[in-house]
Image (cartoon, rainbow, N blue to C red; front, top):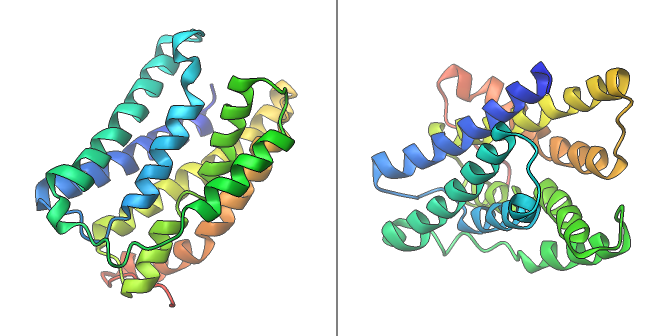
Length: 212
């Protein structure tokens, strides 16, 4: 554990909590991509299957349970509790174009050809592109609510902080995981345009919009 990982985890958790509070308080999931949330739930489910076999620390176990629980709570609100407010007409990204290639890549490129390891690798690859349906929805509708923008910024910040975490671990722990680092860099790049618009628009009180 180091300060970058801790801050990254806090940012990640904050983003998820912001989203949950936004949906619950407004009683609406308008502007939220259910498909991105499905992908994130799949990420956490496949990554944390070792929850039943491996204990690292109380903190580690707690975070795993929280991520899984919150991801399915989000899906419940989008597809059941507030389903009438879900914008399915615009949330049309073809997620199979992400899942199938990622599944194939995780079988071909992994650390160990074992089921749990392949599923863990799948989760790493999938997380790097899971935000695409959300960005696609924002682009298609033309803008995002401020609270949704805060959620996206928190997720992007989490990934950026984890890049610094890996640099730290490389220098102080000789840790280097090419799969994790490449996937993290790809994910961070996807947020770059959003970061710029967030700073230049949202922080100045304007609504965020992405080019179609």
